[in-house]
Length: 234
Image (cartoon, rainbow, N blue to C red; front, side, top):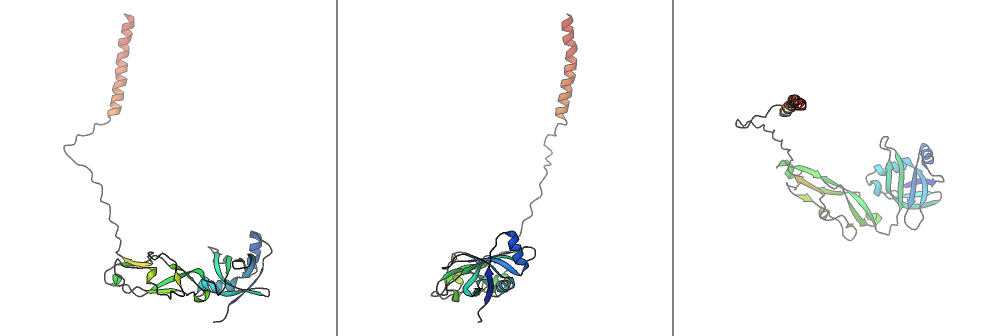
């Protein structure tokens, strides 16, 4: 496979305005770190990095980052994309050594039709879409593919179902983590309508008790007033 080389240049200025000017030239602000070198701010060819991220190996693609006459082996560690336009806004690059084991995340894809879906009417769900592994850069797989054909309702696939060469690749993801499974179709039960009590023996509610009591009280006060006046006259 041909070695991928990404052109880059040192980035002298920082800040939002400077980053915006870098993007207008077809470059993307970046930083490279790790390994034995110091962290360095760069401006990197945006088209080349976008092509790498869209490739089959994606962010695990190993390439050479060329700054003037110096070339360093690197991978994309992290990146930021404009949520509206989809353009790269910033990229973190990680220096790597081909003889040093490293940790990366690899996507998990499935194929086949689960028997639990075909015969039992179940639903297939993908729960975890990537696993973390440790290996040499040259041994990083593009993806892990798992056959789901034998899955029945209640059965799961876990990291232990991924077949790897233990001398080359160590799976770090929790072996109990569910990657995919087949479950029964969830049906939401309708809540029963509230039943209105129609007991004929129930005592009828007294209408406007408070209002009547208030009226009676007021009338009582009006009737008691003349009696008090009579007492005064006596």
